[in-house]
Length: 485
Image (cartoon, rainbow, N blue to C red; front, side, top):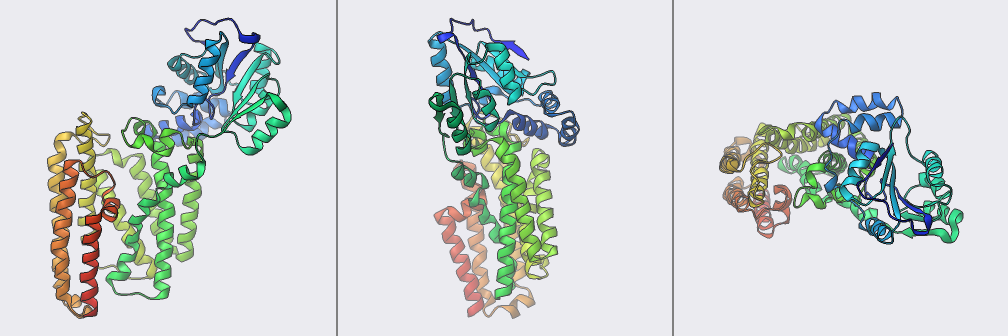
């Protein structure tokens, strides 16, 4: 349960030891959940194994996960205020100890990396070092009032009861109030570094919900707009948005290790510690349940499509995104499922033409996404991406994006010449104006991605970039003129 750092202990300031908790205190996350998601990202079978290990208690689960995760401790999100406190205590000649419910081997690795602690104590030998168990251990080791304690949660109240100095870090209001009642003037509080609300909104990625506007495509393509259909399409949009957000949270949890070494993704809420991995563990199932509930309210068929969308998203996040080319095909499928969801919601049979255009177009967008990532990779001086693509694949990806995009335009052109289309639109010849606009839009998108000037997902970029928005407006104008003339 104990490990010593190479730092020699100095004379204790006032005879007390500064004891620091890890999860939520020194670390802006939770190592049990960090280990779980790290291990799961490496092997999906960890889920079943974790359930089996938990039967032996939390200490057994922590030991089991610690043997299966590989977390670079240097990239973990530490709280600089707590580190500054420990450094100041040591500078004054005091002894420091990291005492945590985290598994002892992981706690020791973190302590060795930071080089700030004279002692390290963590969960081991079947003892979960938390709450009353931690309080009892610290009393036996240092004596009652023989230490100051920095913690964060309700479980730490038992420890603060036997500590001399009491410091809370980012604690909930009820925990701060309880600590004030118990410790009085001995209590000190460090507020959260940032409010959780904005971080949760960022984790949901509401800007990505723009992709779910695709659910309205079947209704518009069939000129089938009425209040009931519109309400059903809105329901499909909400259901997919909530489900997609659950998938984004899941993806961020599975990608924590990789994201922390990425120049942009390291700023995501879970990667930078604005949100703990523990928060994400409950957030994604809540979002999923809400999304499925909305889908079921619209209809059982939409529920089935949304459920399939989530399963496909999960398969992509856990495994498929690591397989070259499979990931691109899967992304194109996920986009197309959004259009299918829109058709199912309003009870329309989707045309083969619409599905063909969507598959070719979204394959092109997925290829552009990988092209942009490889361009960034090249700029960073790296050769191989997490998806297995190499920098030299940029030319092939560029060709695939252009070819698939132009095929989408060709299918659209053939569709315009269909007799049914000629009957449906008052001036079907106006639809030909859409084709050169799409060729321009696809060509420009591929060119910017190759130059490294595309920083976002292509769909988000398409809706947020001024030139792209102008193209989309012109396309809408041509479609409206084809209907009304």
